[in-house]
Image (spheres, helix red, strand yellow):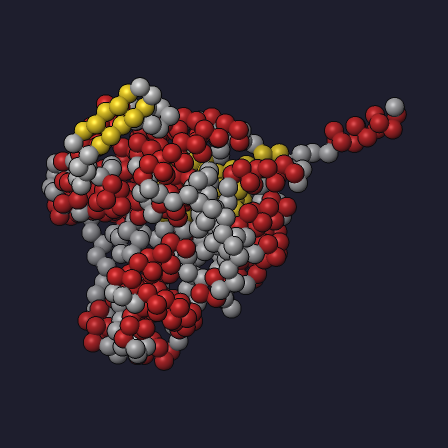
Length: 499
């Protein structure tokens, strides 16, 4: 009895460390697996459920979503934020933002600051800040502007593999992040490049240098190693993990919340979310995927070549599509090999938006032309000119930089400077004094014509709370679809045929 009692006493005295979760289903899962095709009416039926399970935050939007939602989905991003915020009073909504509001173009500071203000006005409480080069000066500007409007800041340390991205590099970066007074630091691996061994080394470094600032962990599953890396991060003391809910987990997305929570529990940690309450959410999004013809995320096998070219999963899909359109799909292996060479030429930029696209487009041009740097993208020329940073320009191979800057187009761009215009000037360009701030930003990011088409689009039928459509709404939506000549519905004793 005394031995058993002593054992119980020791067990009770051992602290159980909690593991917290940030949900990425609506943002990264949506972007990685569904190319941003999730509609607002697919989110609303489960938003309140997501609010009840104990997530530290729900990541919901990136600037890249605005163009996609307006132009293709005819969906208003601001309305999505407002409606989801109303359904999730307990859990902060999070946005992600890079160097600029428009990922591939320079954005005036006035527009970026207005964007941050409107995020807050529409219900967002946190912003995850990234810079494609981990540039401290850019971090400082974005953190300052975010704090000014009342946003909590999570700062990404973006992981990459190159001779530049060493342990000392991430040690110093973490120290710089601490100086900025951010609310959290996130070791972010957008390319799925971390291995368990590398996480085992790098995780403790970031935790140590972050001091009292909480650390998050974010990785992808491109190589199949994402879940193992998340567990190594937990063992290293990173106790906030970014996960997605199946079927929007795995594949090129983030690890599954079910898998990480279950394995964390087996390791002796205490997940702080109610995973069983998420089962209906999985069922809901599985129905949405089947209804809309969207893919289900599945675990991927290990791929060694991914560590060589480092191309994000979504970008490979785009490369395949673009090469297929010009009947050159068989040359994808050549393009991937050339991507490795171009990245080295440009000084090993991190393969994350927009630099991964800069590298990929230039490599494709090199392969198609049959001669390296015979054809040049404007973005690579701007990169070599220093428009994306003096450090980036200085890192370019001198011979390659000389070749790029000797081109006629480089001479044209050399005298160009991004315009720093006021909001009044932007408003005059996109509709005049009667345009509200939310509408102005939609027009700036997606274009006047696309916003006009959004406003003219008929409302989509609302679905029932379980995500399925009532029969009248289903018939209404089917009637709007082109290409259908006959519809037959059979359920129980009901048979309905329309031609």
